[in-house]
View 1 (cartoon, helix red, strand yellow):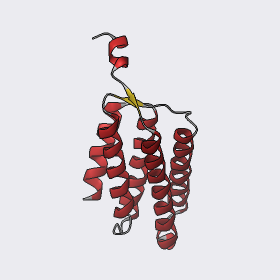
View 2 (tube, rainbow, N blue to C red; view 1 turned 30 degrees about the horizontal axis):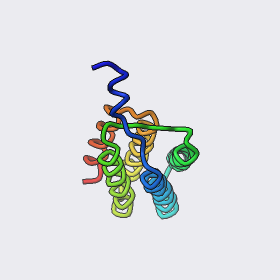
View 3 (cartoon, helix red, strand yellow; view 1 turned 90 degrees about the vertical axis):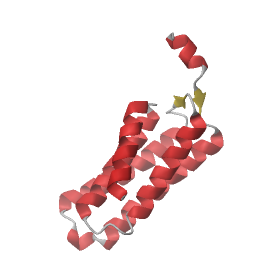
View 4 (cartoon, rainbow, N blue to C red; view 1 turned 60 degrees about the vertical axis):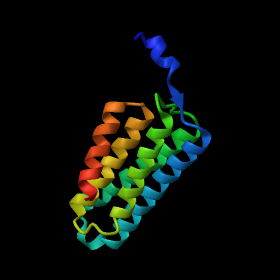
Length: 138
């Protein structure tokens, strides 16, 4: 199928989907901040910097979606939005029970990767990040 025909079937996120996804990114950034505060003595300086970078990146991705700097489109935007929301919610809630800072950092890094893949509408990257997040939060 030609690229033109594929683009005919692509859907942008609705304003409500964008709002929900950006709220999820912000909630995840807040959860990373809370994790950082609760586990401050256990974290190395580099881990603290990484957590700060993840928080900033998620907030930047949120701003990009809200300002329409990033215009991801998918063949089934409803299903994709739901998968992103479920993954970010699960990642956020998992931080409350994760005691190992390395695992928490990995959850943050993969969530940031997911947000980057969403911004570029990189379906393969999104699917990989979703699988990795699912494995980590179990």
